Image (cartoon, rainbow, N blue to C red; front, side, top):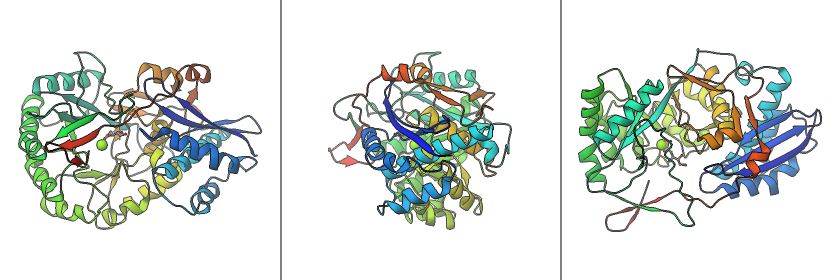
Length: 408
Ligand code: KDG
Ligand code: MG
C-alpha cells in the first residue's frame, strides 16, 4: 500500500525518452512518460531532484490527492516541464491501480465507448507525386484518416515533410534532430498560402471525397491568414486544420472562427485546462490536441475532456513519436473510455523504440486498440534501454526569408 521506489529512466532508441518507473512495496510496477521533446533533461531533473523524494512511502492509490499535492504544493504552477513531471507520476499510478485491479486501464475510466480509436497517420512529400505515394503507402497500412503536409515551391526542408521516404517505407519523420545545435528552416507564409489549396484540390481529385484529410499549420499564420486558409480549404472538406495560429492569445481564434467553417484543432503545446478556457467556452475550436504526457496525465486530461464535452468539442490527442509508447498507451485508454473521443494521431515508433517499450496496443482497419493486459499494457526493457544513451537533440528553428525568427 505504499510507494517503495521511483526511478527516472532516460533512453534514446532512435530518439530521447524520459520514463518514470514507480514500484510499490508489493512489487507492482507502474510507468509514466515525461518526455518533452528537445528539453528532456529538464523533466528528468525536475522529477529526480524535486518529485521522487515526495513519492516514497505515500499510498499509491491516492491519485487525485497526489496530483493536487504536486500541482498546488509546488506553488509554481503549470508549464510544460512541471506538467509533464506530474503527468508521469499520475500515469504511473493509474498503471499500478489498474494492474492491482487486474484490468486494462480503460475499464477503470468507464469502460469501452467504442470498438477502437480512429487513428490518423502522417503523409508527406516534397511535391504532389511524392505525397501521393506516401498517401498510398498509408492506405496500404489500413489508415482511413491521413494528415497531409507538402513542400512549398521556393522553400527548402520544412517541418512535417519527410526527406527520404521511399515507396513502401514506413513514415517516421522526426523533427528533433540529434545535433548539438538546432537545424534552421526557412519560411514564407505567402508562398505557403498560395500553394496549399492546390495540393488539397489535387489530393481530392486523385483519392476522392471519402478519405479523411487533416492538415497542420504549425502556428505559422496570423489569425487573418488562418481565416483566409480555412476559407480556401472549405471545398476540400478537412477533418481539421490544426494550429492555424499561435494559441497563447486565445481571442485570436475568434477571428478565424468567424470567417470559416473548416474545423479547428489546437493545443499540442498547451499544458492545462486554463489554456483552453476561452477556446472551449466560446466554442472557438472543435478538437483538443493535448497529450496525456504534456497536460498533467490522465486525471487532468479526463477533466479537460469532460469540460470540452459540454461544448461538443472532441479529442484529437497529440501522438507523434516524441510521445513515448507509455504516453501513447495512456491516451489510448482514455480515448477508448470518453464519450467525446474524436481521433487519435498515430505516428508509429521506430522498431528500436518498440523493442525498449513493448506494447500491447494494436492497429487494425484504421483503428487503434490499447489491448486488454492489466494496466497500460507497456513493459520497459531496462537492459536494452541502458544501451541507448541520451543524445543531445533540438527541434528546428524557423526563420523568414530576411532572417527573422518565426513561429514553427
Ligand atoms: O515535439 C514537437 C512535435 O511533436 C510536433 O511538432 C509534432 O506538430 C506535431 C504534430 O502535430 O504531431
Ligand atoms: Mg501539430
